[in-house]
Length: 85
Image (tube, rainbow, N blue to C red; front, side):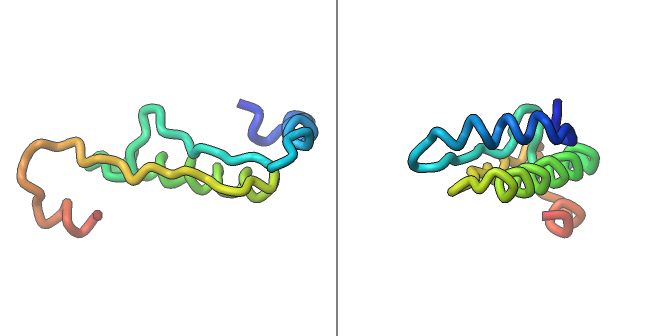
């Protein structure tokens, strides 16, 4: 919620500074799926994942977990599905 708030990010960095081994991060997954056939969900997922990588760099996270997603359609993949994958 405070992704562009410099104060919040500074507080996050200060909180993490007490962790002797540094921190790891988990990219957002709630309602997101990079494998979604829905272009808007797919695009939002990419944007949120890229933002999480930027934040990880800012806070010097050691690792970021990103889930590959799961194809949500139960039908046979179409040519368009293959092109978008």
